[in-house]
Amino acid sequence: MRNNRHTQVGILIAGDLAVILVVTLFGFASHGTLGTAGARMFSTFFPLVAGWFAVAPFLHAYDPEKAAAPAQLWRPFWSMIIAAPMAAFLRGVWLNAPILPLFVFILGVTSSFAILIWRGFFVAASSWRRKSNG
Image (tube, rainbow, N blue to C red; front, top):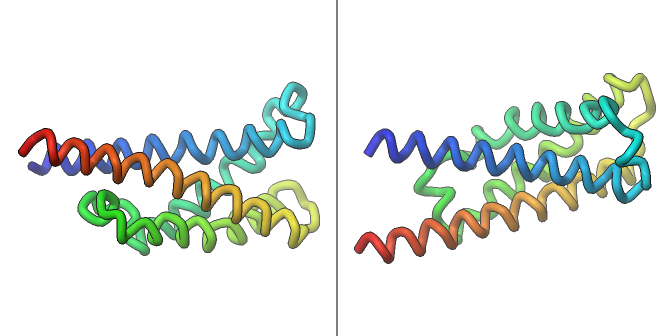
């Protein structure tokens, strides 16, 4: 049972990182700079990862039982809402640039809905797996 728990947490972490990467890529693509961004993408990706992992564990977003429950989808959603301003601050420090409120808002909305969609798939897959296992 313990290995299954670790596997589920590993899947959640991998999925969350993939979502953060997709949000980062989408952000650069929406500005038409994806092809030339290169290492500049790290200035968004790493702060968002840091903000996410600073918040998500405290809201129990990595508890497999909670992560598999539809009623608990608020946990990853609000974790990302809280993480976005932290990520924007870290990004501003990294780039030595002002933090635009509109950027914080867009980062928070897109990231929280993206994580919600991924975690919704995780909930559905967990439910399907429970039903197929009896």
